[in-house]
Image (cartoon, rainbow, N blue to C red; front, side, top):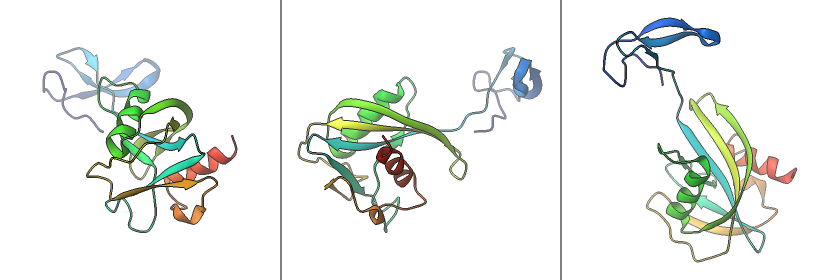
Length: 162
């Protein structure tokens, strides 16, 4: 997000050279830099003890493909807390183990993605209103279920190399 006004005092920001950072929006009143930032989103491939992965149908995301659990970081959470919260909110599963896979910047969405594999003990799905359906699929999955240009596909390809 491009900052124009100081989030602390509301005055307009001016560009100022800040060390190695170069030109950065700066509040003359608060005497502090205000760094631009992108939203942070976690995405996780949820796997149970039977080597099954949870795939979600979320029509607001895509009507043609299935997706993994994903959601936005909330201030005050760690990335791992965000993963646990999103998995529980979206499909009612409790994460008992996490493995970080990768982070990357998604230019089209202007979003930083933090990608994980979550391990759960299989329980009945409890779907949020954001999720139209969810099913367990045995690994390896049919890759045509995922959007070949999507984040879930990218993470699934990484998972196969682990």
